[in-house]
Image 1 (tube, one colour):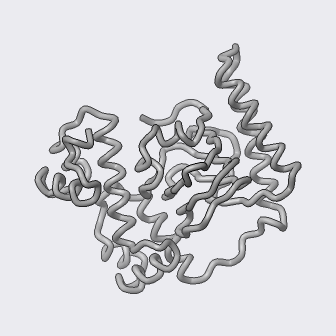
Image 2 (image 1 turned 135 degrees about the vertical axis):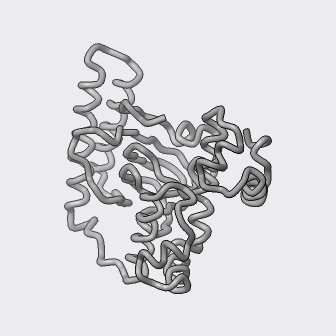
Length: 258
C-alpha cells in the first residue's frame, strides 16, 4: 500500500525480517532516508554499487531503483516520507559519508526527535512530523551543497548504468526485455550489459530479474491475489511460467513463498 504518513523504522523493521525486501533491486512509492550507525554492507543506488559504513546517509527518492545488503551487525534507522509530500526534498539519489562530528550529531538528533513524534501520538502530530522532515531536508541539502560531498562527474559507463536503472524504475515489472531497454537507450545489448556489470557487479538482465522477483514476492506476501493473477499482472505468459520463474530465482514455488 502507498505510504501516506511520515514514519520511522529501524533497519530490521524496514526489511520486516525478510532480507529479500532490501537485497533485491526494487523501487518504492515513498522517499527514504537511511542513516547507518553501525556495521557495513553494500548499496545499489543510481546505477552503481558501493560499500556502506557507519555515518553514511543514504537518500533514496521515490521511484529510484536500489538494493541494500546489510552485514550481520549493521544497525541504523530509516525515515519514510510520502511521495506526495510538499516539503522541498533532494531530487537525486545520494550516498553521503558524513565525517564531521557536528553533522553526525545533527542528523541523529533529527531522527530521534522524529521517532519521538511518531511514538507519542500527540495532537498536531503530522504538522510536527512535517516540520521535522523539513529540517531533515535542510540538513540533507546542506550536506549535498558542501564541497566535501561534491559529486565527481561519472564516467560514460556509469551514466549509462544510471539511465538504465532509472528506466527500469519507470516501467512496470516485466515491462520489456533487456534488448528493448538497450534499444531505448540507444546502445547495443552487449554494451549495456558490459556497462551495467562494471558499475553494479550484476548484469542488466540480472537487475530486471531481481525487480520482477521482488514485485512478485511483495504481491505474494501482501495481497490475496492468486499466483495466476500475479503472473498476469506482472506480464508473465502463464501461471506455469511464473511458477518456474519463482522456483528458479528464489528456490521455492509461489505457494511456499506465500
